[in-house]
Image (tube, rainbow, N blue to C red; front, side, top):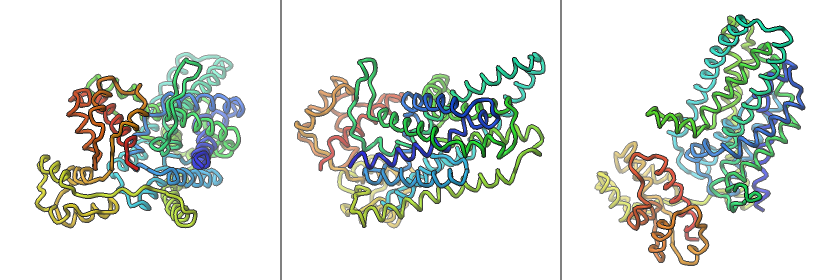
Length: 488
């Protein structure tokens, strides 16, 4: 049954390849500088490499928006996103899987009555505005630089043609890698928390973890979409749908688009910024379609804006606005039928209760628990009802409200020797394993209790103050243990 559920992610990958190949090679193919077959081959190879090597960066932000906790639910989230993507591709509108998957996850959140992380949602939505603006700024700047260089050097026409073709090919390769790195999380990201793939070694040269195996499958499906159904959207973007582009302008557009996608998916760039004391850039799955359209409009504005077909731009912007809504509606309705007609578990209920331990934790965090006494030990079936009760009985807001919700979340965890024997060891240190051994026989009702017990058992489970990478690594390990030792 599992391969059937993963098929929706592969369908979504195919849709992404069919729609978004236009963003990296559309202008080159549309201006007839590169043949479609050549572009498709290079695009496929580097989309796969980008997905496997650098695809993990933007996955975490998507996970904050909604952590789909059942395989059938993940199947329908990906399928709804793919159907929406396919419909938009049929209509020749360049939309993005980041728009469709965000809509689908919100649909799942509403159906399962899970809370929507509005902080993560705002972060993603803000990039949908910032992304085309940044791409336009890049394209305008690069176009001016490139035009000045050509005026100074005055290369022979044949030489300029050869350099432009080479530039378009390299820019397309760069864009394909960035597309795979940034957008693979929208294709297979919902399956990462619930996949049970084991690490595999490839000829002893390198190891693919579960997420990389999923990203490889997603990358292959994107490549299939590139070859089979991408030509139609190419003619909207690169064939003069928005405005006619010269080969040089086409090169600038693809480079600008690729720079934007790289900025929002590069963990290495974030590490460099932090080492310089600069604020990190949020790693989020941005829309490659918005980046390419923004870059095209940037060059058009530089030329006075009269060559831009604003009616086409308006139609594309309208499709961006309705795409998440359509995807959310399809997902919500489909989940209803999948659960009630086909009797599939589309989500695992997460219950909440202000237990004595949760109340003690809140009191130690300077939360006034006297207002919460009427809710003590009451069981709530989902986050929405618990939050509503909290707001009715207390004045907690922002961080304290979030802390109360996180503290009350129930998640039965039992550390047994049999389960511990099956735990993969290579991702934790010997000291961390020794600390885990001391917890055999323990049972916890909340996730945070396991993290606290591990921290008390060994300093190797205590986050280092100021070291965000260490904190993130420990958090990932504890979350894995919470799921691994979850009581049935």
